[in-house]
Image (tube, rainbow, N blue to C red; front, side, top):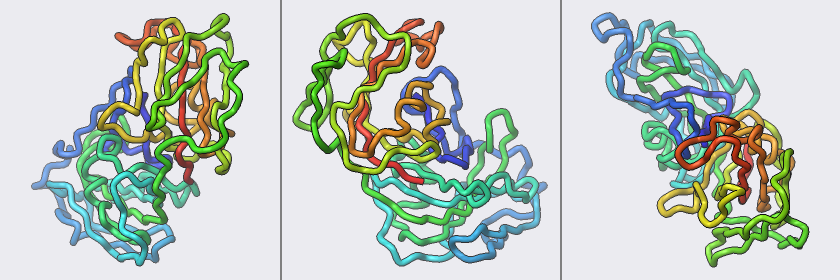
Length: 318
């Protein structure tokens, strides 16, 4: 599974792969930019001007091209909220500027879709993680790193202005009323920590996406475009003796689906999560055309596989 992590700001330098979707987008934040340092007219964050108030689209100015050798960050204005902590879900307005041209590449202020991402260095770049950790909510941060704004583009120094709007500690598991599962194709049981297991499915694999709620939460419904934090485990319909992937594995945390509806995950997730309530647990039975299709995702997922996912919806922001 791969996620964009940053809703409107799909900058490859900030993305990390989670569980194995076939597309490859390895990131190299420390890679040198295509413009050499000797040709740069600006070389540090001190050469960058940022005008405007927190909560408004900033005006970023510097003499281009800008080349900053190592990733750097600077707190432009400090908020008075709680400090950002490991494991929290962050909602932030982000503006991305090209160091080569000095022009805005993208801003969530324009799209009116704040970025949402977890404070989890296995899902976001360590540069972003380090830039925000222990910074108070309400702060405006200036950050630079070297990478590509989108796949296939040349490397350059990228400039980010990040307005941290809020943070939220996601739930650790689904919470709510357990529902009758007698009509479901699989029965979910739970370990003490909430990790799910499933029975062998009954009947024939469906031709269309099917959704079953096992725990009904009392949170708001997930809307398309939000950043959604989930815990999940996935099994093959033909072999439920062991999962092929799970965020419950030791050392892993909640997984960000962002923006849900258009995230870089399988179609069954983008379609099946919208409209579900935060706090709920759902079982998605996903036919091949909404999963990995004829090609599968070797070596764990053969072609034309029907998939079963048990997903705990922990938070939804944006």
